[in-house]
Image 1: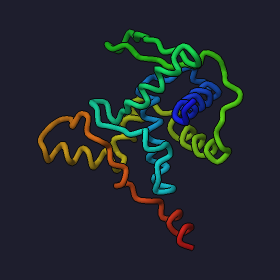
Image 2: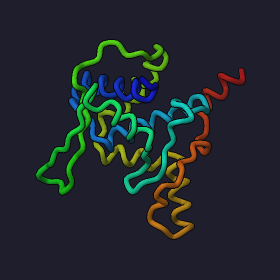
Image 3: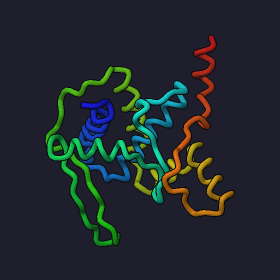
Image 4: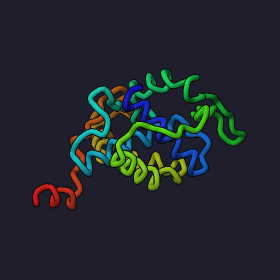
Length: 176
């Protein structure tokens, strides 16, 4: 199992333990994106590896690698289905665990990091989660580029995380 697949399963497990039986694809993508943003803030490095990259789409950052990981996990560990809400015209693609996973192979420090991100962002509505994502440095930079090019979305353009400033306390800690 890949590291990304392990992190997805851990996110779904923690969400379930927090009372959310499933996450929409939008929520999952946003949470994984925010893991990457927070990792850059704390370490200046990726949380994933070079195989996971995010590109611009109409609903924010997406990743082909995440889609592939979800396909690999589907029917083995997770279930992906569509739910239609009466007050929303589009189906909601829901991802849920087939069964609770007790042993997930992540380092304790990785679990602490993921948990901190989950605690902050999991309770948010999808709308609030989108607002947080769109207010990150990489998305602000992307939106500025879209304004300059006079296009609504630079679909498929690579998200650049290098614009994220490292947390000042971490810089002080590292340089001490």
